[in-house]
Amino acid sequence: MGDEEKMDNKKDELWGKGKEAVGKATGDDELENQGKFDQTKANLKQAGEKVKDAFDGND
Image 1 (tube, rainbow, N blue to C red):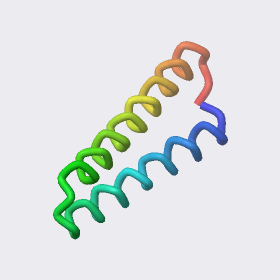
Image 2 (cartoon, rainbow, N blue to C red):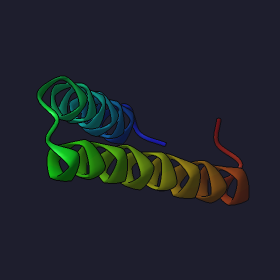
Image 3 (cartoon, rainbow, N blue to C red):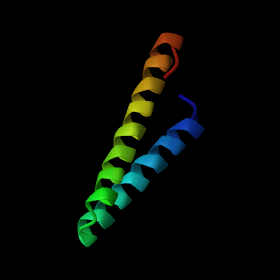
Image 4 (tube, rainbow, N blue to C red):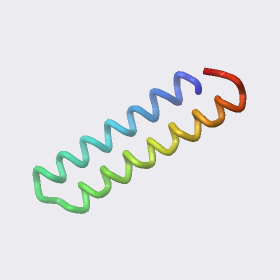
């Protein structure tokens, strides 16, 4: 996985954590759920990149 993709995925994951935290703090269930979704999406993208790396023989 390229460094740029790793950074983008990590950024998206952290952004999602922030949204989730703000949603919890303000009682905004929709924002909290959006944050959880963003984190899940970022984690799936990271997993997909790792699978591609495994088949390419890259670390």
